Length: 396
Image 1 (cartoon, one colour):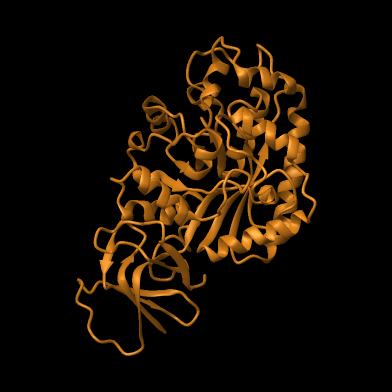
Image 2: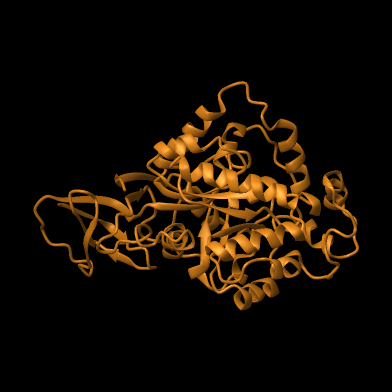
């Protein structure tokens, strides 16, 4: 039995317990959380830490297979610039892609991440995932703008999903890439599969300002670039709505659905999501957003904080795979965000989104969520700073 206490314990549910006590059994499962009301008495064999104890972090969005692109891509002002760089340099590593993936997985572990929703376009990450301590959920990403290729794209995705599962890389589901990269035929195929399997869906949403124009009558930079891949005037309906408002009808309504990025999401889009998708989650990857578009989501319009999660995106657009670093950036830019709120976004909410909250995300009896210590922070004001770090107290 381990008895762990700290300046504060974050239970996973927007609550900080001052001088609380966490009891773990010998295998790391939660036995009990004790609220001392701040009055910690002498307890034999007690481990005490200066800082905040919290459950292991959940990285709700990553592209582990792109880890070899660390530092390759320059900052851009929009998605087109980023995509162009990526396609030019993808596969150009002189070293070993698998080794870079393993290195990134280890980095996430050291940063206190215990579970990850990961985008897959290849099998490259499966070997690492099968050996990892991190619990992965694999989103097999599908994209294609030509209606006559939809069946072929789906069959390839099915084979990749089977490979993920048979490799012990974790569960897998087929997911559309983004509003601007999936034909209506492909949306319909993905929706049917998701509804039949009640699978989790991931969807890159409104990462670029240019997406909305595709559903109007404007030929912007993104439109012209996508013409290379088969985009034409008949690919998408001309709704004159936002990209989210235009595509929402083609997405499954009853599944857990993760909307990724949401940099240019508006209040009416949030309201539509609340109306149509009872199991939706908003995933923010702020460091990546600054790298690709130099913008952050308007946090204030996302009222239901129980549906907000955090992700790192890939090392193609980020220099770390750290949920703590994402939280630090958000608090620096949105100082009214409480540390409790940010910690819930980085733990329990992500576990709910990936349907693993029965194991991870909070300190509740019978769970084994891992235990992180956040230290070198302002414990008086409960604020992160540049020196704030995380280390693992108990593995999951």
